[in-house]
Structures are given as C-alpha cells and as structure tokens.
Length: 216
Image (cartoon, rainbow, N blue to C red; front, side, top):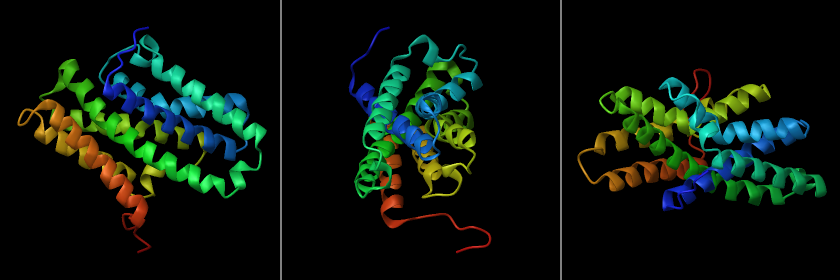
C-alpha cells in the first residue's frame, strides 16, 4: 500500500476523518453496537467513492485496492467510540456543540475535496467529454457516503433536507467542470473545492435551506 503524501492527500484525510466521525456519531446516537458504529462510520467516509467507482466500472472499487482511507476511517471510528465509551455524558453535554462546529469545518473541507476528486477520477478514467457524468460523479463522491449512512440509519438523507449540502457540491462541481481546460488545472480544482467549502460554511452559519412545498 503506497501513500502519496501530497497536500491533497492531507485534505482528503481531513475529510475522511470528518465523514467517519459523522457516521460514527449517528450510529452512537442510535445506540448501535461497536460493529454498527464501525460500519456506519467507514461507509460514510468511503461510500461515495465506492459508488463512483461502481458507476464507471472501476471494479473492484479503489477502496479495496488502496485501503488507506478505509484504515484511516476505521481508526477514527475506534477512537471516537472509545472516547464516548469512557465519557458517556459527552453526547448530551455542552462540549458536543464545540465538537460539531469543528467537525462541520472538516466536513466542508472533505466535501470540497471529494467533489473535485470525483471529477478528476472520471476524467482520468476517460469520461472527460461527458460533462453531466463527470459532474454527477463529483457530487456522488462528495455526498454518496452520507446518503448511505442515513439510509442504513433509517432516516431521511441529510443532503435532502438541511443546509443545501448537496447544492454546495453541485455548485463546486459545475464550476470545476466549467473551468477545466480553460485555466490551470490545479487552480480550477482549488476554485471548485473552495466554492464548495465556502457555500457549506455560509449555509451552516446563516441556516440557509431550500424552500419546501408546505413550509417557508
């Protein structure tokens, strides 16, 4: 297993930790056992990439061929489970608010990173001429793990009801795909990722939500 210690690896690692933590925390709040916490945490972290690879026929998915992010997610889940097990009042304490704020920032970084990585993977795999496909694959890489998490946890997927989560990924994916080939590739990638991060953080801070049919 080869680890490429680039800046983007560390950004993806931050996102993996955040996604794994969110999945594990959902499982902990649902009072699932250790196996359930591990499954939800790891699925949240790498599920989007798995869905992307299956769609483009990259089988077995990359998570099985290069499991560095699976191992990172697994370690994160175990640490969080152990911490909550020792500090059982943490989930219902005031400290959880500070924890969730930090994790939200990490989550935004991860969403931005995974969105542009999904597009890059599609292009490298030879689908660069199919704009809709590469944008879809970018978004599914970013939000797919969270959707799988919520389905397994028996709740409406977060991306469909809170703080324009998927919309942030879509906006960044559209921008990156539009800039690709027109400006420097690294700059286009960074612009797309930062757009996702900015929209996510602003949406959380100002509680932006899309309107519902029966609400506001």
